[in-house]
Image 1 (cartoon, rainbow, N blue to C red):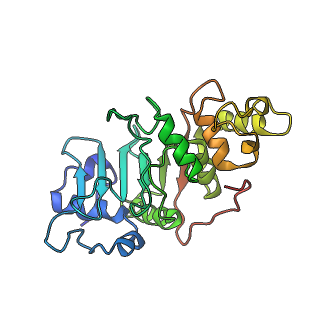
Image 2 (tube, helix red, strand yellow):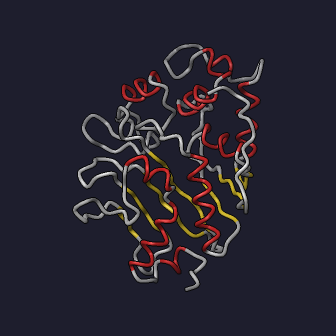
Length: 262
């Protein structure tokens, strides 16, 4: 059976075919890490894979849990079609749920923060920063980025496409994407402005004054700490309107060396 080339087309298919197709996004290494069966069911036959892909919609939300009782998924995503029918990743992430959780995604009263975009749980963010996490992370990652990228490229290819778009929500994510061969559709000027600002004698250096934990003097030399400073509005504006794209690699996913230490 030839698959549709768009999310809208996939969402018109029977649920079992949609499930099988969207499951192609999940890297096998993640299933192995958590002992999850290929059918994404637990030992009692309960479904661990959640999909929101209604017929007539042009997007899909997906989440895979390591158990039905789990609070958070080990992989989650939100994909949509562009106006030209190409694939666009709006949200994608993986959690090592065996590591410590940091409540950067909610306030103490339970109000959602949209991963720190709408509101910020500063206490939780400081704890995450100290623990070595980057903005937006509620857990450490499972260190499967390259594997997940290859898997997503396989998903793109099975839909007959050779190009996809992604919206990095944080500065460090955009730089990681750069090192995996992504190009900018929009936001290149912002990225260049940040690079310039953190360079020697750049205009952002004076704001790394230690006034709070997110603005450490050493941040200019570290990717993760730069990202925390950007998240802390050191630019005077949010990190937004950055869209990147990548043509899929038929054989491998090359990665250049990251210029900044983590």
